[in-house]
Length: 311
Image 1 (cartoon, one colour):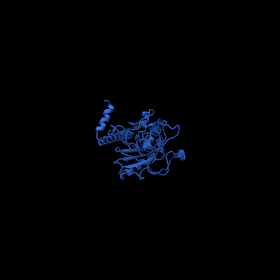
Image 2: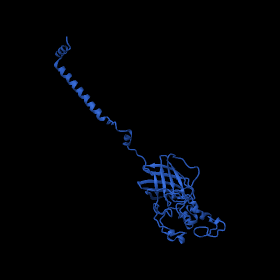
Image 3: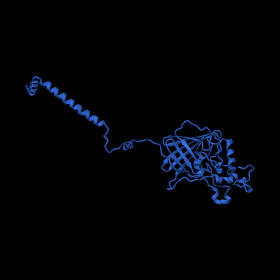
Image 4: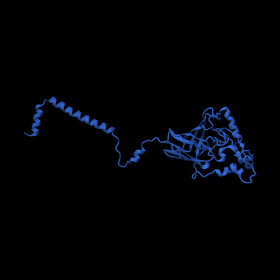
């Protein structure tokens, strides 16, 4: 008997209702498979075209990287003369240079305008200011320290990597490293630029500066600190060409409470902008050592005075 005849006979023997249910079952199973296929296809990632490279895929993934502060920057203010507000005043060289030898007036960069000295410590600042030409460490070409090095009247260059940020300063040809991968470490001894540990808080570079020498000043107005100075710097990129710079000063020996200076830093955008050499030692020698020269009969300091003890 042929296969065709067998199927015909089987169909004739089956009840018609059974054949109807069997057909329905086959129909719905087929539809379920089709729907499952549609769902799987819709949930699958779009196929990558043969021309789409791995680098193009990587660039489409957003990475929250810190801003790049690299470049040449400079503070344009008079904070290096006096961080508090001050009027224009003459300097020891005014009688030689005239108007060129004047300390320009400036507004305060201190948040709240005034430094919160302990009452007995303000007198020391006033004494420093009265004889600043002989006493200012920066005039002797000593390293200005932090934060003063940032707003000396010369540019500086930031070079940024993931593990270290290096800053080269034109004034005095000084430099410092901010270590980004040494949390919790400290310096074995104090130094003129201190020990700097950095971290990122969002888009702001925060630098913890410790172990600085007690000999540095904040400016030429005699504002000073002790060996317990602690500085926290904050560099926040405002736009491509401006940084908001803050430095919070803590020193319980000298100040009632922590205080902050704030100023903008400007990117030097000239095509040939660069850090030039300024070795200040040779320009400070007369102030420091001229009285030691043989047969010297002139004044011992820029202000023309002859102090009992040489600087």
